[in-house]
Structure formats: structure tokens, C-alpha cells
Image 1 (spheres, rainbow over the protein chains, first blue to last red):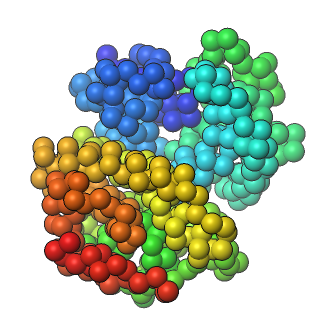
Image 2: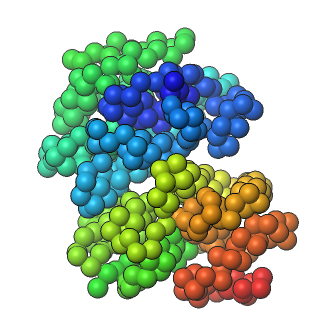
Length: 222
Length: 222
């Protein structure tokens, strides 16, 4: 059976779960706390981060973008990257935007400071990092609004890996209640379309041990 | 004519230059100082970073990995990703390793602190960041040695985007003289094979204004 080593609040794990769900691929989930640096896990992935996928054929894959490109190459019934090379490049540009720019400017400042430091017991949250995260998120939500005023989904006409990468980051921040939806109605419409996809439901059912999700997190009418 | 907006010491720019050179594609180079945040440049790339490629067909592309995947899709005479999906996933895993893990653990601590802060006039180098960069680089050079003891190139039998991504980062650090080659003879052999490729020569001829390269940087017998 296919198995995904993941951690609930990890956006990279969420991205791969969404891709597996969209492609209709069955898998078992195994929780991995990457900060424990288990030898057995480091043997699967020397970078030590989640997610790691063990595919049905026994192949071990790591790095979230390498995993989803592999899934896109291997399971082609549902496509999450456009066929056209320029549209594909635009999709990958936005994937990198959310995987790296959004993550470093927003997610790390909020999710790492507020949740991971507590779980890892590595100190108290840095209030200036949290302030930066709250400041920066407006710029990214503005960008989502800008794009979706001009396009059906973030990268163009179709739902793609760009929407998945963005939703993976934003859903982790939304678990904290830190997305100012009321000030970004266009971004809220985009996210409500994502939330209503059946493939997104399992993520909305997530609950971190000892840190239950706020009510609006799973609510389709948020 | 194809044009690449780049900055000399930017590893992401170096990566795209190497891919263009390997594929034998001609291009003009235009220096862009991304910290100046020129409006005309932000109109090409809202993320504001280098490189940006304007291809012959007029298409504007940004994000280094999106650019090189586009070049790989479009110009197939020279392939830099393996055909096999698992080997391709392994290559992309290593690309992400160097583009993100090496960059955040080594390059940012050394190149940003020692060079970019001086160019951007944003303060003095952070000595604890520099110490961390010098500490972390050993682990990455060990990993290069580990891989090349088992494989011809980093990702397998063939020279790939993994070698290019690694060389792009390491060459920027080597411009500072901060790669401890003497302690990592296996990594040095790998890098000397890269340095002797004709496609690498233009990078070895780079000189930052006011900060000439040290002698060993361009020397094939370093």
C-alpha cells in the first residue's frame, strides 16, 4: 500500500495529500515528527523533512515538489499541470511563489512561531516574526485577488498545482485563525471554492493533538 | 534575441546561465540589481528576483526552476533531466536540496552577509550567520562526496540539473574563497570536472565590480 509520512500542519505535506486526493490515489497516512530526527526516517530522507512518499512500487520519494512532479509524470488521468509549456511555466512560477516566498514571508513567521516552537519546545514565539507574518499576508492575499480577478483559477482557466500549493500554505495559517478574510473578499471567494472540493475535506478534518482547529477552519461558510 | 536579466553572484541566475549554455542557446545578459526594485523589472517579475528570461518568442519567464523546466520542455536536443520518472524525481530532489537547503544553510549566510549587504548598503555582516555558513558547508560537501562515491554524477550516471544546481550555489561561495576544498577531496574532484566543462567558463570569467575574484576561483587546478 502507498504510504505518506506527513505532519498535519506541514504545508508541504498538505500539498502532497491534495495532489494524491485530486488524482484519486489511495494511501495510508503515517504521522512523522521531523524534529525527532528518527534514524529510520533519515534513512528514507536525508533532508529529514516531511513529506516522504513510499509509492506502491516501493519507491521512496522526498521533497514535496519532486513528489508531485513524479505523481504528475506517473498518474496522468487527472492533470494538475497544463499541457502548454508557457502555461506550465506560469503554473510552476506560482507554485514556487507559494512554496517559498509565501512560506518564508508568512507561514514560517506564524505557524513555526506559534505551533512548531510549542510542539518542539524550542522556546517562546518571536513576537516580531509574528508581526511580520501578519503584515506580509495582506500582500499575498492581494496578489491572489489580482490573479483571480483576471483568471478563473490562479494560473489560468484550470485548477492546477498553483492553487494546491497556495491552499496548502494558507490552510495551515487558517488553522491559526490568522487569515484576515474579511479584508480580502476576492481571496475568500477563491478559498471557498477550494474548501468545497471533496478532495479538500480530509484536511478540514485535521486536528492537532491538544490544539483543536477553530470552528471557522472547517466551516464552508466562514 | 533571447535575454537573461541576471546578477553575477546570484546562484539562481548562474543556474539558468549554465542550463542555457549546456543547451547551446544564445542569449544576451543584462545586469539587474534586484534590490533597486525598478518598476520596469517588477512588471516583468512581481516577485522582484533574478533571473528573468525573455525568450526569443517574447515570453517572459521567472523563478529559476520554472525557467529551467520550461527550457527542458522546449529545447530537447540536450536533456538535463533523466527520462525515467524515478531518476527524474531523484534529480529534482537534489535540485531542491541545493536550491533551498544549501542556499538557506550556506549561501545566504555567506554570500548575502559578505557581498550583498555591502552592495545593498544594508548594514554590517552578521558574524554568527557567517560562522553558521562555515559550519554547515562541511555537511553539504560530505553529502556531495557520499553521492559521488556511489554515482558518476550527483543524481546518477549522467550530468543533470542536480549538478548544475549544486555548482551554481557552490561557485558563488567559491567566489568568496569560502569552500574548504582541502578537507573535501571527493567534492573537489566533482567540482573540478564541472569547472572544466566549456559551458562553465563564462561564469569563471565573472568579476563583480570592485570585488575581483580570487585567483583560485577561475583556476582549473585549484
